[in-house]
Image (cartoon, rainbow, N blue to C red; front, side):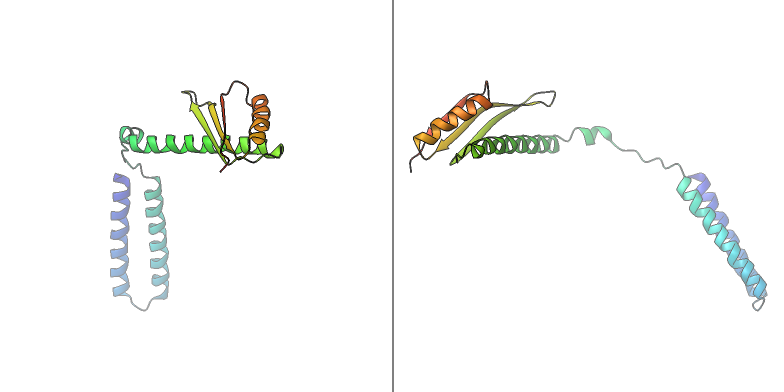
Length: 154
């Protein structure tokens, strides 16, 4: 940071000196060209100093890492996306068998290592025959997952 301040001071000093020289010789084109060239070099040097400066900005990583509200929101969004993905998977399985459910609900569990498992699938159908076919299709595809299949004839 000190180098940047020194470079800025040098630029200001040289620009003031070149302005004073141009006031003494206002019609000399060569002096104007040299003044412009010196100003360009000094501004380029100042920009290089600013870019290469060691900025000591401190970030409070504890505050960033411990934002509980943000962490909770992200976990909720992750769980919601996982649940929607599982429900889409079940809907796709039923669609391949030509069955349409009125309502599909998948309960999931996310472990500490980030793996996702389906803990329960709840389905509602309009007809008993669809419910039985769905149970047969899903029991083979979702082994070990408890299925709750209900009929709502309304």
